[in-house]
Length: 481
Image (cartoon, rainbow, N blue to C red; front, top):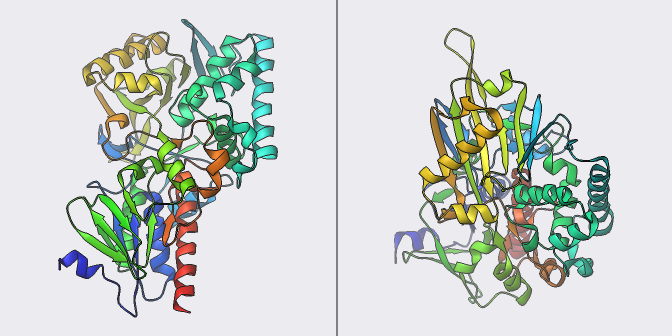
């Protein structure tokens, strides 16, 4: 018997839980179980060599910045992340948004200074606002956060079809809806279920929050990078007696025995537990064999889920020249002249050795959706040239020679296969949505995809982890009875 097998074998007086996935949701779940459960042990199995999942923070130009998920909304919108950062003594930094914004559509560059691009015609602006109101009303009133499967008729069409119907002849409005879908889901409107979009907006508390900086979901970043949250949670898990095993890719979960669940890794290791929590995107579960097979609805969710596509890059400059010229650094674009559809100021201000404020000036750019899938097949040098060319188009010749350029191609990531979230095509959530959070025997589900609040964001990952921890503890207590 291997050491791992012996260590993972439950004893009569200790309840063992295995959490698959060392991202924010899995680590939150593990920490909560250890903190609340008496005589309960937890082992976290992470397939990669780091914790953090879809958050990744690396040192760039002397500071640690985010190449994965990064933004935190105001406290009233995302209270769990604010409480978690306060407990872990992590500071938030306001996302810069003041100045002219750029809208680059169909080869023409416009500037504007409001939340909704005013460069459009009055009728197009009215159409866009009515479309956004329609989405918000359907999301919050008709669909809601908890049971999208109750409105299966909305699952029969795509976002592309509905947006075309609602936008009419205004191509600029369609371009903006396409940019929103690319930014939020990392995919194209033609691939996304209308019901999934509405449910996602309901979980966010409205579509406006998803796209706004000021008083929206892009309002703050975490000083030092968001991966710190998972790293700090991992330290807490270990301090509470939990174990975290890296490079532990799970290939089989066997619940056929009336005793412990057996989890097998691709390297031959085995672990045993009374309960298993899967805190990974549903699409990642395609590589895991379940014995016996999961219920049909859960199989359909796993099989149909697809991960968005994102390539995130950061260009570093000696000064924030775009601010000097009155620009906020924020850009929304189609892909008519290049692959980048979205850009933000990513300047980090730090205190220097003499107490002075030192600026690390950066622009963060996103290639999303079909463009990310296409450009992932090209070289980093080709992507760099294309990204910088667009920055020059928007901000002038000073953008031509960044002092440093780094990127993360999430499409090519062997552990996530993309970013930021799993989505569903038509005819999946309607018939099978009720199975999204429903435990299957002794298998429970976490991950931001299962959240009912801020789904797809770090806040949603924390909420889902907390909910799964409560489910596990209640089931273990009933088992003891």
